[in-house]
Structure formats: C-alpha cells, structure tokens
Length: 313
Image (cartoon, rainbow, N blue to C red; front, side, top):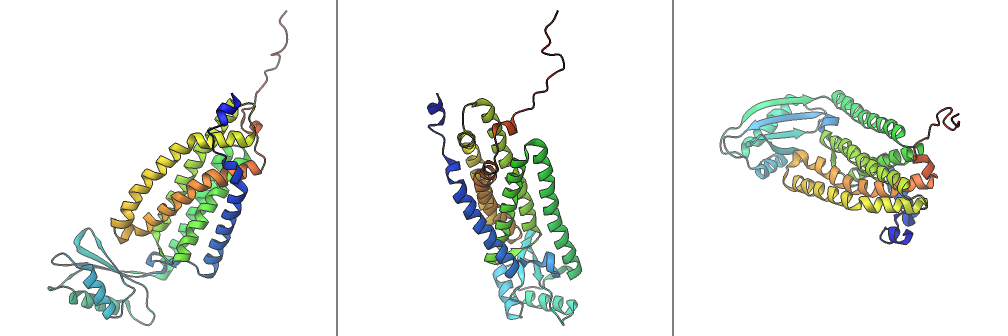
C-alpha cells in the first residue's frame, strides 16, 4: 500500500535546497538592482503633465509620437483613452520650464499630426509632492498586506508554515520588483496594483497547498514528512497548473492588445504568476520542511475532559 500511494508522487522536496539557493541568488540580485539602479518610476510617482486631447477623427498615435519627438518630447507617453479619437499624453516634469508652456508646445505638436484642429479637453499637473505621497502610500499598502497575511496564516497554521508563506510572498514581490528594475520597465500605479493582486494570488495558491499537506498528514500516518509533502503537492499540481494557465492566457491577451494603460499591470502579473507558482511549491513548502514542520504541528489538539476515563460505578 505504501509503495502504491507514493509511486506516482513527484519528489519535489528532493530539490528544495537547490531551489532555495537559486531563489536566494535571485532575491539578492533583485535587491542589488533595486538599490543601485532603482525603479523607472512613472508619472504617478514622479509628477508631470497630463494632457487629454480630442481629435476630429481617429488619431494616428504613431504620427502623434513622431510630432512630439520632433518637438523635443521623445519621452512622452501617448495612448488612447475612451475612444480612438481621445488621446492622453503624459510628460515627465521638466526643470526651468513652466507647465503652461509645456502644454502649449504639446498641443502645437499634436496639431501637426492632425489635418484639423484638435480640442484640448483637460490639462492636469501632478506635483512631485503628490507623487511622493503616492509612492509612500503604495509601498505601505504592500507592507500592510504582508503583515495581514502573516497574522492570518499564523492563526490558521503553525509558525513554521507562517514563516514559509511570508517568505514566499516576499520572494515573489522582491523578484518581481527586481524584474522591473533590471528591464527598466515603467513602474506606475497599475504595476503596483498588479503587485498587490500577485500577493493575493500567491497566498491563495500557498494556502491550497498547505491545506492539502494538513489533510495528507492526517491520512498517511506512517509516511515521512517529505513523502507527505510530495504527495500533497502532486495532488494539487493539476489544479495549480490549470489555474495558472487560464489566468496567464487572459494576461497574455491584455499584455499584447490591452493597450499601454495596462501593459505594466499585465506584465507584473504574468511574471508574478510564474514565480508565485514556483515559490508555493519550493519556497513556502520547502522552507517549512527545513524549519522542522511535522505531523504534530498540524494535528488538532485533543482536549481531554475531566473524569472522562473514570470508570462508572
């Protein structure tokens, strides 16, 4: 019976040390890039000018970008919003130049890309202090999410599994931030929303694995810890794979045809799902096993009633 139960189980725990070493290297490389290179923060965090224009007909974004580049705004972000006639242009802050002047130059350049006069719908100026507040609030939101998850997992499982779950989440967040730092992709509020969504997705996957480990501990009394964890992860592998695959399909569509507005959001979740699935198996579970998790840690405490063993007269 013992051989029959485990003959199809994948030996994930055999590679736990190798995977933890690889993860440690990736985390250190990500931290190194974050401290030396930093993130390419978007206008949501740095401030700048946002101009909304309405074209009399469908706007040609390539021509608009070419006109802006010729006018000295090669770093301008141009995208549709609402319809193909509505265009949003975002410009990073420029020292020594009034925002009003920048707005006039942008409108003049946009008119060069249109056969008819464009209409200015709105011009917003985002100050650097607002960007700093958004930056602080955003990363505080990530910290609060991690602390809240630590409390939740500690109440539901034993402390070794709590440490594994939180370490897995930190692993996912740091490496995803490192990816944005190394590639130089813009980090804005949509990416921050993607990171927060990643935390929820990753902890859900980890909780499913931990629940199955607890069930398997109760069912297989004579199995070792490694055998039990391998059996539990193998039994949830099809569910994890299908969930990740179907979610990734949606994100791939958003990444390629969803537009520049949600490009960073889709990229952060696409990468995060891949690294989160890996960490739920090898980082969270592997670290819990290394810390000495055992069957007794997950078994419910038996409360003996006073006088239960007293024979009746």
